[in-house]
Length: 259
Image (cartoon, rainbow, N blue to C red; front, side):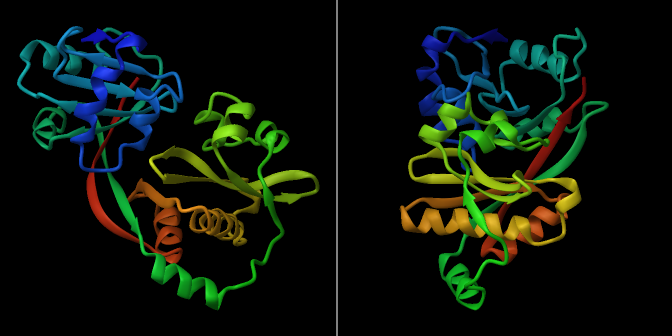
């Protein structure tokens, strides 16, 4: 495994296009929207790629027949040499990689669900729920800086300025504090993947529903395709997705690499 220099990231773009499921997080690294890492089997003519987003999501794809790379990757996945300081959530393509990963010890396997947005279903839903129960406002720089939680915009954008210039979000505010925000985690080619964070003490009140509706309405107004993906084990996220008109179209293994 060789760490690819950012000046060579263009070598990853075409192979990444062959991945058939949602890979917007990997595109954000490859297109340098965020500072992640890319490992390859060969610096000049790579055919195997491992892309790591700073939030901890990772994508392994390409040639799975390179024994030397595979051996090094197994050591990396198991953290045999303590080269990683944090966990990583891994997706693979093609599926032949699963034959290598799923038999490794101490690797937790979950399921990642990709959804497709059904705009007709959402429009019917919004006609029946045409008034949001909470006051929602556009997420500005001050809100960006104030937000706390485990899935917040600062983990997906370089800075408040970067988010304000290139991204979008909508927040519910209580007592001057943002308590729920739906935001663009990634935007590429008119696709906008939703991220959502609600303060723990405010969950179960419909805030995520309201902020997501505001963001989806924005997508429809400005011709973005809303994108949703989450762990199957995250029942709250799955249920919210379906309520908002997203339909599950693909499930893939989702591996947790230990520290």
